[in-house]
Every structure is written in structure tokens, then in C-alpha cells.
Amino acid sequence: MLYDRFGRPVTNLRISITRDCNYRCFFCHREGQHFNARLELTPAEIERLVRVASNLGIEKVKLTGGEPTVRSDIIEIVRRIKPYLRDLSMTTNGSRLKELAKPLAKAGLDRVNVSLHSLKPDVYKKITGVDMLDVVLDGIEEAVRYLSPVKLNMTVMKGLNDNEIWDMINFAAKTKSILQLIELEAPREMTQTSFFRKYFYPLKPVEQKLEEMAVETRERRMHRRKKYFVPTEYGIAEVEVVRAMHNTIFCANCTRLRVTSDGKFKTCLLRKRDLIDFATALRNNASDAELVELFRKAVLMREPYWK
Image (cartoon, rainbow, N blue to C red):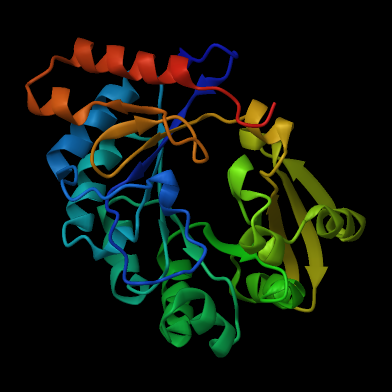
């Protein structure tokens, strides 16, 4: 297992497999990939990366984008890498889940996170730039049949969807999915911008309310996130709160290394000069030992953003 200079183990990879997306979410952070990247990793390259990672104790991978389901070879990617992993998940906007949930599960995908920022068609369109809420809701229904658990990611934004939190909690209970309430994230230099001040909605008061209401509370190892089990009219809802901004506990318990779609290790979502190129070595027939050294180099660069 790999540890960084701060004693944090790296146990999972977050692999962006494309920068392309069929949505236009106005607040998208593009997984911290602030550059154009047209030369994406191939399925074989992703498989080799995951195989080497698995030998270093990394047993969990989350596939991200852009939107991973826009890749025509997404099923092949899942099928290739699942044998090396204990847990394989994916983030998606849900636009293709109705057709892909079953084949993805058959290929080896364990679970899925679906971005769902509103249950109101007009608000959904304003956030995502597309009029596809009904399609996504159908996709969530299909995903619940074949993938477990299904998590709903709601980035809460002031004046836009903050009045839907409790509706979303009810919806999660009704669909037997897990709700993740997420604070808007931005690097330090962006926190004083008019954009951030306009939309940032602090979730600490919401979390305090959930703690009062919960019949049970658990804590995840990664980020020390709390999970609240809250009574609703549809039964118990499972709710996680992701408060990354200015949260030293969150960063101190991060176990993730990121991979960009063009084959670079990235140590943190909010950093811009933290890239280690491994695709070039991969394409120049580097040995597994050489790839391991690049892994180690990237891990030793890791540093908590909020300290």
C-alpha cells in the first residue's frame, strides 16, 4: 500500500476517461482538468494502469468524465478492469442509464453515482443546460434494479436548488437510493468571486438538522463523512453530507489519487500544478516497475489542500 508524506494511504483511484460531456452544467469543475485533452486513454491502457494499481493495494476505482457513458467503449472498459478490483463505481449524469444500467452491471460495475441537482424541470434545465430530467429519472429507476447502491449527487446552490433539499431526501427514500448533499467547491482564489458568493450554500446547518433527526448516524473512513439515517414519509432515507470547503478533517482523511483523461496522475481536485504524466511512459513500453515509480512520485506529491 502507498502512503503519502502525511501518512494518508492511497486506496482508490478516480479515473476520468473522457473530458467530453453531453451536458453543459454551468458550475462543472471538470474533475480539476482545466485543459483540453483529446488523446484519451484506451481501454487497454486503463486496464494496465488498474492492474499495476491493484498490486499496490488499490482495490477501488471510480470512473468519471466529463460523462463516461459518452464513450462508445464504456462497457469494454468496465469489463477489462473489474477483475482487478473489489469495488468499481461510476459517476454519470444519468442520460444513458436506462439503456446501459443492465449491461454495465453485467460487465462488472458495482454501483453508480447519478448527478441530480433538481427535481424541477425548469431548474434542472437551468443547471444542466439540457431538458432531460424525465430521461434521467427513468435511468435512476433502471439503475436501482441492477446496481447497488445508487447514489444521487446534489450540489446545493443558494437561490437555485437549496429549497429542494428535503424534497430530494424524500425522493431518495422513495427510490431506495442514497442522497449525497454536496457543497459547491472552489480553489482559494475563487472564493471571493461574485460567482462563488452568489451560489455557495453552507451545509453545516443542514447537517446539524440531519443529526437531530437521524435515528442512526455512521461515519465513513474516507473524508470522515457522516451518514445520516433520517425518517421520511417513504421510510428511512440515507443521507451523506460532503463539506469539502475549508474542511481540514475532509482533507486529512482523503485516500484518493486522480487520473486525468489523457493519462496524468493528479493529486487534488483544487490544485492546478500537480500533474505527473504516465501515459507517455505507458506508450513508450515502460515496465511495471517504472509505472510503480510514477505512482510513488505522484503519491509523494499529495498534500492536504485545507490544513
